[in-house]
Length: 389
Image (cartoon, rainbow, N blue to C red):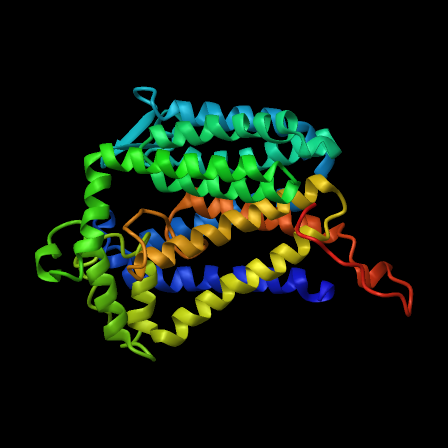
């Protein structure tokens, strides 16, 4: 398995990127911001793929000990970028959320970055560096739980203040998994998760538009027609797209829901368009690609040469896998509506850049990984690999 892990991971990434370009050609002319110019949006996506490939290549070659030494600076930069979202003239407010930074003052007019994409990787690197530093003291309450919890709380609170509850929950959940794998105090982790769920409920309860999403989610199938012009409309249209596509789809470019009926068909709701135009076979193939990325990515991460590398690898895999799971769950009406893109497929530069950097780090770990079948002498039993690293 070690011989094909890196190739399989990279192959899945290339397939998903290819699907992204194909679907943008299909949906691009219906994107309002580009006034029917499908190739403009494709060109921008290709540009971001090129930038992401260069960033991923840098992540592939950077020595992991350098990354560990730079961890405090990376973490600090992530928090500063999140804070810039609230600075007038720098941060950009869209639909009541402050999630973007405008780069117009740098001569990049119309280009926006989402700092939470950088921050989620920064907090993973910071946690991994901390646990590498404390070593066996990871099981102590103060050094193994309390300090890492504070490291996580700052960026998660800033992301939550941007009114990006979904991303904040995603980062919190991924960091919980990383802390569990690192051997942090389990009872304290359970209490923290319960407290986090209570905090999410409180935020949703007192933010009207977020509360409406949950209310509409439970009302969608009780009276679908009453929801057609409300927040539940997107998920109803998504389910109509899946139903229309059936097994083999209606044909590339022939989908109906993207024609101003399903907002964000090129970003958050690209998965239903895949189902409508290419059918169940294509959507299941996408799910298989993410499953293979999870399996091979975790295999690489757990065989990294250092504890820091193992924790960074686990964090990268979990962030991509959870995001894909949440997007698919939302677009299939299994969870309330939340604006998270489908990794490597949806249009968007910041998330694409983040995903390709994570892939580059995993391939970096693969180059220096310690695999049992390579080191084990003939006739010796396999070494058991546990999830706690």
